[in-house]
Amino acid sequence: MHFFEYKKGELHAEDVPVSTLANEFGTPLYIYSFKTLERHVKAYEKAFSSIPHVICYALKANSNTSIIKLIGSLGGGADVVSGGELYRALKAGIPADKIAYAGVGKTEDEIRLALKSNILMFNVESEQELAEIDRIAGLMKTGAPIALRVNPDVDPQTHPYISTGLKKNKFGIPFEDAIEHYRLAAKLKNIRIVGIHKHIGSQLTKVSPFVDALKRILLLVDELSATGIRISHLDIGGGLGITYNDETPPDPAALAKNILPLLKGRDLTLVLEPGRSIVGNAGILVAKALYLKKAPEKNFIVVDAGMNDLIRPSIYGAYHHIQPVVKNRRKNTIADIVGPICESGDFLAKDREIQIVNRGELLAVMSAGAYGFTMSSQYNSRPRVAEVMVKGSEYALIRKRETYADLMKGETIARFV
Image (cartoon, rainbow, N blue to C red; front, side, top):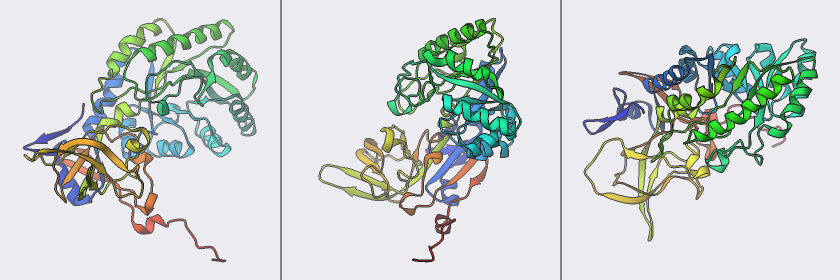
C-alpha cells in the first residue's frame, strides 16, 4: 500500500499535489512518500517482534541518504554490497553493528573499510574471498565476523535476471560444499564465524520458496552445531515482492507466520534484507509528455524520462503502471510510452492502454521507488534527475538535479589532445 492517491481528480503524494512538485522541481522527478516508507518498515518490525531480529534494509534498492536515515531512525540496519553503500549507510547514521556486507566481488579497500567500521558481519561468497578476508584481518590485527552465503538451490519463481539461489547463479557457496567451507573458516585464526546467509532472489510473490530455502539452511545449522560450530545469526535475505500490475505478494506478517514456527526454540538472531518491499511502492517517477507521434502501426507518447532514468522496463521487460497526474475524460488509446534516448530499447511501456495525453501533460510512473534512481545513469549525457520526499503537507528536495557541468565533473582533457 502507498500514499499516492487521487484527490479531486489530481494525483497527490500524501497531501501535496504532484503537479506542485513537478512545477517547482521540474521533470523527470522522483517523489517518495515518508508515510509509506514508515509503514513498510514498521510492518516488518511488528511481524518479527517476537524474536531477536535485525531488519537490514538493502541499499541497492534505493540508497538516498534521507531514506536510509529514516529507516535507521525506525531501528533498521543496512544490507550493503559495496564500499560506497557502506559509506552511505554509516554517513546516514546506521550503527555499524547493524550492517551486513554481501556481494561476490569485495575489494581489499572495501574489506578494510568494513573491518575498520566493525560491521555486524561479512556475507562471504567464495573460498578465495574467505581467505582474503582472513589475510586482511590478520594485517589489521583484528578478527573478521563472517557468515557464509549458502546457495540452497531453490527456485524463487521470479525473473531469471533477479534469481540468485540456483546452482547456475554466480552467488553463494553450493549447498553440498557448505560444511567443508565452514570447517575451513573455523581453522582460520582471523575469522570469527557468526552466521549463515541465504538469498534466493528478488520480487518473490510466494512464501513457499522462502520456506523451502529456510528448511534446507536449518539442516545445515543443525549439522554445524553437531560439529561444534555455533551459528548465532541466521540471515534469510530479502526478496519479498510488491504489486506492479496484478501480483498479490505476501506481506511481512504472512512471511513471519510461515517461517517463525520453523525457528521456534532456536537461539538465533534473525536477519532480514528487505529492499523493494520497503521502497518500491513508496516512490513514483513523474514525466512530462513532449510529443505525440503516429506511425502506420504504432502510436507513441514521447516523454522526458528515459531508460537512463528508469531502466527496469528496458532490461527486464518490467511492468510499471502509468497514469495521468490529472485525470481527464478523454478516450483511451494504445501507445508505446517512450523516452528521448537514442536506443530502440528506450521505453517505459509498450502497447499500453492509457487515456489520451496532450503535450505538456504529466504522467506518473508508479512503483518506481526501488531500482529506479539507483540504476540510473548519465547515458546520452543526460543529467540525473532530482529526488523529493513528502511528509504530509511538507516536502523537501533530497537530491538536486544534476547540471551539464556535473556531467564533466572529474574529467580532464589529455595534454596530448
